[in-house]
Amino acid sequence: MMMNKPLYSPKVLFSLDAVAIFTSWYLAYLWRFEFVTTPLFSEAQQGLQFTFIKMGVLNLIITLYIFSRHGLYREDQFTSLVDRVFRPIKSSTVVFFILIFLLYFILEERLSRLMLLFYFTCSTSLIALLRLALNTYFPPKENFFSFLSFGGEKKNLADFIKQLQLQKNLKVKEIPVPHNISLHDLRSLIEKEKPTVALLSVEDFHKNWSSSVGEVIDLCQQEIIDVKIIPSLPSMALGQNLHLMGNVPYLSINSPDERLEQLFLKRALDVVGSFLGLIFLSPLLFLLMILIKLTSKGPIFYGQERIGLNGVVFKMWKFRSMKIDAEKESGAVWCKEDDPRRTKFGSFLRKSSLDELPQLWNVLRGEMTLVGPRPERPMFVHQFKKEIPDYMLRHKMKAGMTGLAQINGLRGDTSLEERIKYDLLYIKNYSFYFDIKIKSLILTIWKGLFHHNAY
Image: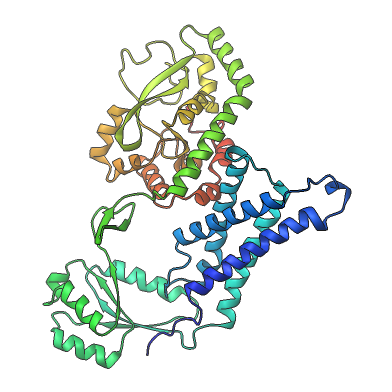
């Protein structure tokens, strides 16, 4: 009763994607420069064949590399149909923004934006349709999955099985392994039931079975049974990743996704966004500077120490909204509603979040990012890390002007525990696509300005 694999392999998917990418690129070129004859496109630039070919090859290499890094060519019998269809769309979106950045900020070559948009629409649709067709016309003949279940941390195992059962047309049979079973009896159980996979939840494994994890894995390998280990380690809020040091594997705990293309895209968005923000908002910034100077004594800007990436202290800049020496008597305290330390104009600045705009300079300098966990002051960090579990993990990512917690209304006098949950959720699931999906930059405008908890 083995679960049959699909009739197509990762090599087939790789080849089909390459064909779809090349075909879409060529169709986009023909559509923009050959087929379209309406007055709107009559002035289309000619003689771009060489540039088109050169950029097409670069696009093909980048796309297949990103697809490979995002795991689109791994053989995984647990992957659902939805994931197989939509993951290429998410990866294609990443590639599209890389192309835009390269063409308009790095390289000298220029291609029509309409052509790129047509290519993106055509390629993502074609790649998704090809995967849907493969799953429709070449499905496994028998969609049956049987597995050995080594308990331990039952919640993790139960959740895993539940997710398996949610997959369409997947019949799941669990074969529980009795506690303290000998290797001889385990081999007999395997020969009788013929499981496909062994699922090991390793929590307290040594207490429940006389055999070691290594002995069970060796036996499963001898019987050609795939082994899936469900880790049950404490404090894994950000998850875990398997790496290799030479030929030695090691498990990295609570390390965020640091793939090169993701870091590149996030920094590129930060540089472009903060630079354009400072340019286009310069009239507003200048007006606010004048109003601050006219309505209160003291400097226009206020620099405050905050904790950023990896616990490094940096100076975060804001428009001054409080009186000079506001914390001279009270010391470092959180701002509260109707805070008497604020200036009259400062109340408006804080309520509208306009006091945060100078942080665009911190973003441009690389000390902050547009979207990420909000930074906190050192004295509060030292306090909270003792009181809130996993609090310091939020410093695994660069501090942001706004974050997932803020766009969900968690500002001012709101639950710190809830904020941390959102911060860690964002770091754990971060991708350039995720930044676009949550629409942090847009939602901040609507939910950040004049928010009822902003004071």
